[in-house]
Length: 179
Image 1 (cartoon, rainbow, N blue to C red):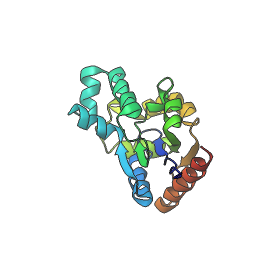
Image 2 (image 1 turned 45 degrees about the vertical axis):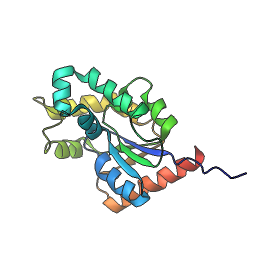
Image 3 (image 1 turned 45 degrees about the horizontal axis):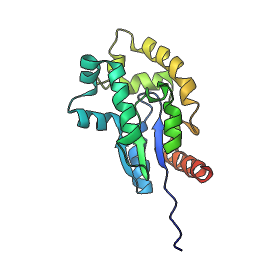
């Protein structure tokens, strides 16, 4: 009887906007020779419109439904690195879905770093407000407890890119062996 090759769990990167999920996700995918997906970009491609337009025309609840559908059935089930939208963990039951499909690693950065990184990008509908710093603090207070449910948590502030990348890969491989 031929031995079946074990599945290669996906790696899901979660965390607040601007922590580096897409940036590090692409590099980790290259290093592991996995496919890379960014849920926001996949949704924009599938819907043929931008995230801000989806929020403006259909609301955040509709966007979250699209995001959930993509995770549940719109991506390959193995050998992928997937950079998830910042609010994905806040959806009821979503952390359980992510963990059932692979390894979940949360990336973190300070409020200052997030503000600096996101201020360069106007396609962040939740931060298009009068006081983005206040909004970041409020949203982080809501989301961080969910991010802490990840299989591993990694800070991206004031660290070398190679160090963060290796930490992500090492954490993924360690947790993947246990799952």
